[in-house]
Length: 76
Image (cartoon, rainbow, N blue to C red):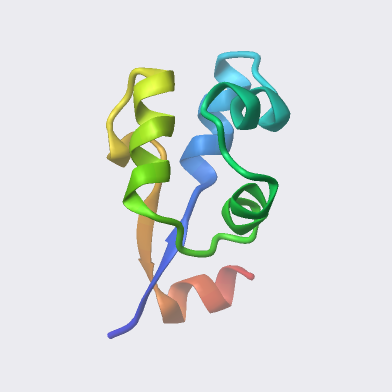
C-alpha cells in the first residue's frame, strides 16, 4: 500500500488562526519552494514540519495526514 501526504489540516488550522500562508512562510522561515511543495501535498523535511509545529504550538498530527494513495487519487 502506498501513502500520500495531505496538509489539509494545516490549511484549516491557518484559517482558524486567521493567518495566511504567506504569514506562516515568513514566521516559520520556510522557503518559497518548500511552501509550494506543501501546497501541492508533496513531502517536505521533518525539520520544516517541526518549525511549523513549533510556531503554531501544535503536534505534527495537527498539520498533516497520510492517506492511502487509492483514496487520494479518488479525491483528486
